[in-house]
Length: 212
Image 1 (cartoon, rainbow, N blue to C red):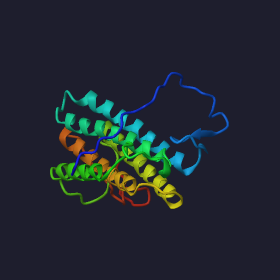
Image 2: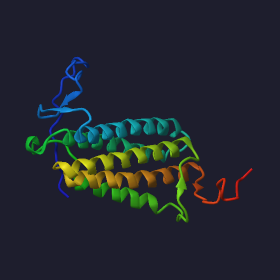
Image 3: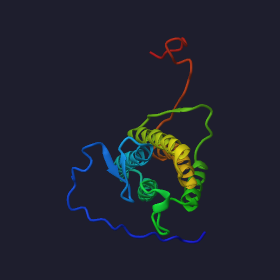
């Protein structure tokens, strides 16, 4: 797969507030004004939220890295994915007619890389016989939070794609990323000695098998 080089950012953030959004509108990359609750803003805004959650996960991972050096492998992947999410936000903030050939975006290369990393880590994990409940460690729980935000971003993008033209790779990328976050949550627990809580339907008030 050939390497693709994107343009470097051309931004100058000298002042954070502009007062131009006080009426509930914001500007797309091409300068068009749209409402802040439009499907396109909802889509890349949720991608931005996902990126923030990823930052929290990387911080937790950094705090744990001294006890488990292999976490550095996952931390490097998460940092790369944060850059990829910014690339995804760039393309979603741009109407199709304004996209430049070398504008940052996600491609099939990013999708394929996620699949490769998932497969490699999944080979180390025991087979599942039930669904997994989030928890067992702070890192596991945060990766599951990231997974659910990723699924919400994916849903927002599907909503946008029903009404506007969007890159097909974008939906595939978020779909794979949601899967990857599930695998990474299990892998992180596996290498750090954390436990997995499996779903037991009868451990409920009506199931009759409540634990003391």
